[in-house]
Length: 283
Ligand code: NDP
Image 1 (tube, helix red, strand yellow):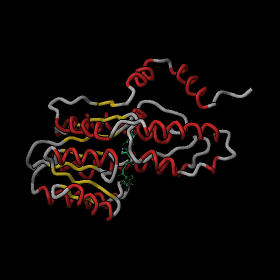
Image 2 (cartoon, helix red, strand yellow; image 1 turned 180 degrees about the vertical axis):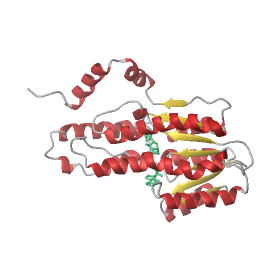
Image 3 (cartoon, rainbow, N blue to C red; image 1 turned 60 degrees about the vertical axis):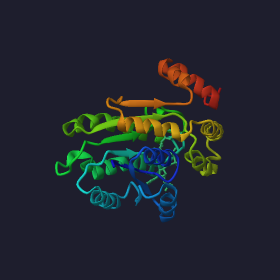
Image 4 (cartoon, helix red, strand yellow; image 1 turned 90 degrees about the horizontal axis):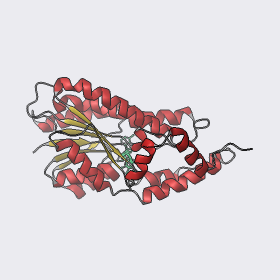
């Protein structure tokens, strides 16, 4: 039985990917941050699921989990690492605290690097392990190629993932380990309700407050109409198992919108977005 590690398996895309891979005969090691989630997932997923408890920013904890997985693999390679754990930090660049940008980059960008360094050897860069080489799936976003107002930190973290993945894919050719990006548009997961819980009252006196309110309402609607996470899980499965996978899979609820975003001149898009959010210059 081949094994896969998924970071951030407690809910959303990570949970759905764990479920689908288990249903298709994989053994899954899924990371959570709380013991209660570990217990819940064990009950939900059964014997072929093993919870790993770590925060992706805690290098020592991730390395300890990798030792645990190595022992369980019993000399075999890991079939895949899905770098999925992530958060979405929002706020205007002129006002969002530098610490919030750091937190965003720590989780969404440094986290996948820590996990890749910890689990990479198990994918087959360690010659002591036997079996086919594994693959890395990076969960980026359509925001890995574009940027909307108020979500610069998130967008920057996903652009960073795209650059990292492109370089890494070429570096890991040395070992026959592939790196594949899965870039979803809106997906219906708890990430959106977490955004709803953020207190934006700190921006009450900001010139951006009306736009923040508008974009928050727009985001919540986007999330509610997002793709089911099971569809992203299918792409993750494809990326892990297809003989000749693409380097990047985009999967979005509204492909036409993605197409327009790709072909319309940036200045035209700027005006459309600014008008919608009330960001046109005053007077
Ligand atoms: P969820 O909020 O449902 O899942 C996020 C997962 O990441 C949770 O398991 C969460 O664990 C975990 N996580 C968060 N911070 C950390 C951390 N510091 N260390 C370890 N684990 C952590 O959201 P999604 O399923 O939507 O998000 C999964 C990925 O998909 C993210 O990378 C996101 O950017 C990306 N994505 C999502 C889209 C969407 O519309 N939903 C669109 C495009 C990309 P815990 O429960 O402990 O917080």
